[in-house]
Image 1 (spheres, rainbow, N blue to C red):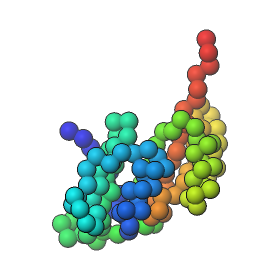
Image 2: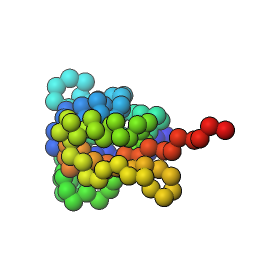
Image 3: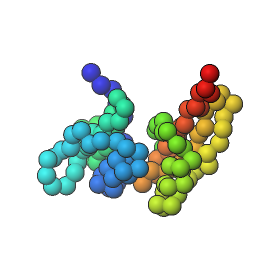
Length: 129
């Protein structure tokens, strides 16, 4: 049984393209099959991510998109610097440039189309033995 976050999106199609095209997620399920998108389930490397339209009716509380975010989506990539440069060239907002961290990872932050922060991490390449 999977556990995964669902991000509420103002424009589901835009967010679907962002996560699929920029981060390599694959669309595994969408509802409905045709017409305006209400929900999408994406997968990548064994992790799942839901994208949904905020409709609050079943939640019993208001649901909204945008800031302030109460989470950070974290994803690992193979080449952080190349991806960060590509994202900026495509108009994605960078929040923090790539930087080596003392624990050995290289990290940066970008913003998704709804303004949610994404922590992008590149693990260190092991030195040849």
